[in-house]
Image 1: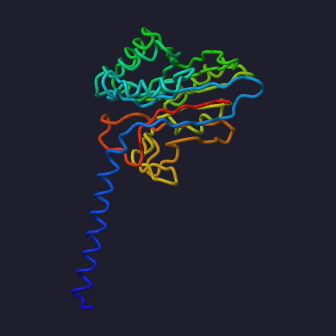
Image 2 (image 1 turned 30 degrees about the vertical axis):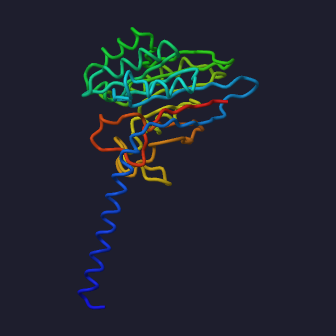
Image 3 (image 1 turned 60 degrees about the horizontal axis):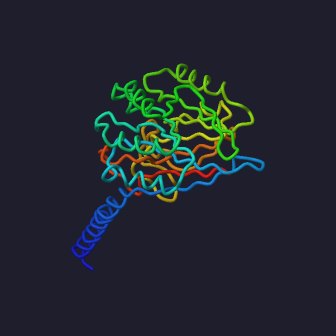
Length: 281
């Protein structure tokens, strides 16, 4: 084979690889916009107590999920959760509030709902307005606080903290301290927070379950190794982006990929938006 033929063959191979990658992107990008329901089962309750089903919703960013948000609402109604926990960035700093309010005003009539802020609520500089709205429609807003509920004979302390944006770590930890002080040792202790990367802080407490979002699974999720190409506050090849993690103190942290779509310029890839359904046994 002549040098010219070798160059032509190499060039042809390069084109095949290039167009294959483009084709894969064009196929998987729209598929990656389809929302899914992720089911997680955790054994955190001892004795003869019943099970608890929690729907974790994070990073909605006021994105559109069908007329009157029925796509998202139907996903939750189908699962019949005992509680709905809203883990921050439910509003957005650029998109309007319409979709979020339609969604919230529907689900709050059917399920006990608990909410903490994310960084986008603070970026909007309307975080107090957003919290006031949530409270006005019946959502419990947790700011360094803890609410105790009993579901199927299980006593649950639901604790929550603001996003740390604009706060020193000491100020933010004061909220966690305040919430932790209200927990009972015999109760199932849940911390609802926006940030998954704050593992070193969470390991200083004894929460049974920590629920977070924020990372969007790194936008482009790397299959099989469960890392993200880039996640805010974690950088490249981000670690805490999706799924279940066991921390050094024994706490379980569940990180949702969230529901943000048109709010984010970088498209999702191998990374469907999700609602997480946790069955705690």
